[in-house]
Length: 477
Ligand code: DUC
Ligand code: ZN
Ligand code: ZN
Image 1: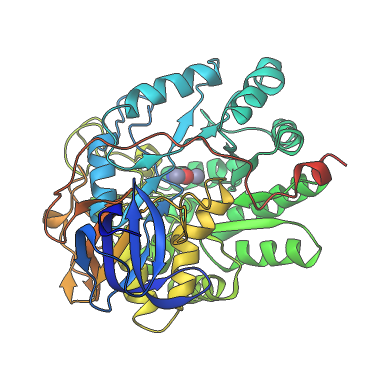
Image 2: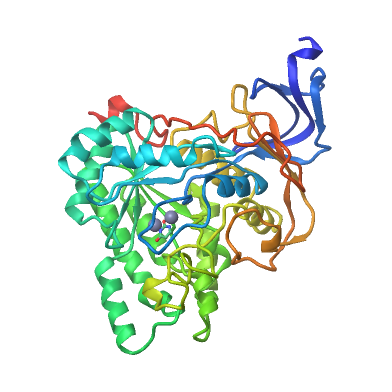
């Protein structure tokens, strides 16, 4: 091969995939990986990785960007600020949610969401759907057509009045997933229990942020997780339980698997690095910064989550980035004021810190292997949502979405992050690594200190059939 053929060669990489770690050069042409091996010919550009770890770019398969919320709530990040923060933290593909409004069409939600992303995203993106109103038109026409067009995953909520489905509706959407080859993601919390507890807490004057955690104890997640599994069993379809927070939900998932059911699971940094105490040990409103659902639990549950990451219980590690500012209207002070916990927008930022946190606390502290890190942050999500091996892989033909890691000590400071949120729940945490380079389709977008590459190059990726599903001919049988 002549020297001019390669656009970029990354030399001396310690490449990590979900199955191996090996020393190699990486040859890139037209945005794709075209050669792996030692002593590759010169490229038009060269980066010497000097034995540094190189992983696939992260796939953050659960984040919320510019998602319309009931007024006065407003997300802080759009596709511009959200995806630039993704780049700086090593994530090169995001999968946020096109959310159907009750009474609205799913197709309209998708078209609206494309308008929000088109031309301003800095990383590639696919969309999950949120089905909040499964009318016959949605079930019989819109959803099957959208699945065929590359929207092969959708989320159903078991809580939140403006989103939740009842059990019959969940059965209906699971049936569509089975017949048309999509993966359903379930937000598993028992809505009636939460409302009952919330009213009792409010009646006792317990409305500070920390009582959010009291209104959503683990049993509400355990019950809904079990019910979701039972509904999936009835329909005979795989499902994925999102944002699993601790032991009781995990026990249900293990039970389902022990009974031969294909139950997949996702967890998030907040369940490894935060506890309910971060919502406040007194009635301070600062706890609103960590209000998310399900809420963070305790140290013992963090250990149970680590075990699940190690032993294959989890296939996806996502940020669940749900960006609301702390100060000012629209965010954690929805009307510009402190409010009772039920009115605090649920969600915390985490797109930029997801990969460095897991690398530092997981890989560098010996809790998980490098291969497991890659599986959880890139390969697993890409396979789960039908974009592998184009994304989430270091192999010939894959998009050259890569992170070159710099193992150095640093402290997380919100002032150094790139999202539009005015805080990070991880302020002051010490880390041992951060991306030295992030590449999207062979272009360096982040060089360790600044965003250097071409902007707004993010493209929509139409997802295929999730590879975790049985092959179509068997599923139909
Ligand atoms: N569920 C999510 O998936 N994200 C943010 C809040 C929530 O409840
Ligand atoms: Zn959710
Ligand atoms: Zn979410």
